[in-house]
Length: 259
Image 1 (cartoon, helix red, strand yellow):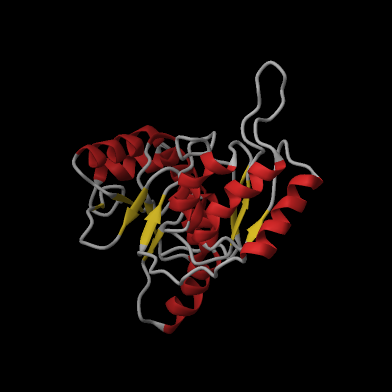
Image 2: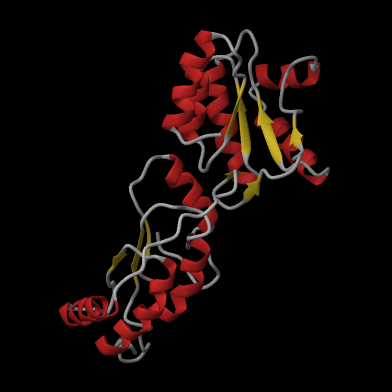
């Protein structure tokens, strides 16, 4: 993915969210490219390696372009020299993006053959869940808001039957203002299409809040629909020790990289 100097993508995705989500989905390597030169990319790389033990790919631009000439301000030799300083992060694959050419790759290859490339040390990655923009590390008790749930709530049941998404969003915002770190989402109610409502609720919630979500249903098809619609690494609720629950739900947790 491409990150800017504010450590986010153009659409606001954080580095930790990218690493947690894609690692959970089973990618073979994670990388950053474009947008910045090798010197400017270093803070991004430093943050990325904190969140994964997968092989890291780095393909910077040839520095930054001159807005008048559109020429980049780093030569091939300088590019290789800057990349030499990045080897300490255990990068597995080096390359170049905008402004680079075969000469840059040649200089990079010569440098790596001459200097070598140390292997990345295996690191402890903290347990965490995330939305696309916010990560919550679960290294201490966390507050999970449970009010998006119709059990024992007449007004919530009425909202579900009336397809009143605004009521659900209001409950979400109130819980976040009260200190919730994560929001549980349960829309199970007789008389409605739970799968359709779950997807609608998850998409709507992601549009107005940035805390991670906990998808909550006893129906595997509903859970899978929610996991497919979710941007990030959520928690899956409603798993018990019964064989049917384990056999139906845990494969979904693995497939979608959830917690």
